[in-house]
Amino acid sequence: MSGSSSIVAMKKVVQQLRLEAGINRVKVSQAAADLQKFCLQNAQQDPLLTGMSSSSNPFRPHRVCSFL
Image (cartoon, rainbow, N blue to C red):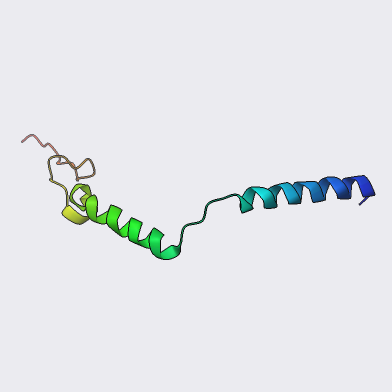
């Protein structure tokens, strides 16, 4: 690695570190509390928790129509 390419690589590293240092951090406990609050607020609309009516379920097995 030549001197100029080494300098370019180090500048990219410094730029990335500055970008990462500028990111606002959130404590894990706060993020977990926010996630829990969001889940509880949206639980009524979650089909995995409340189920789905068979008429509106696009994944229900289709009935076979047979003629005698």
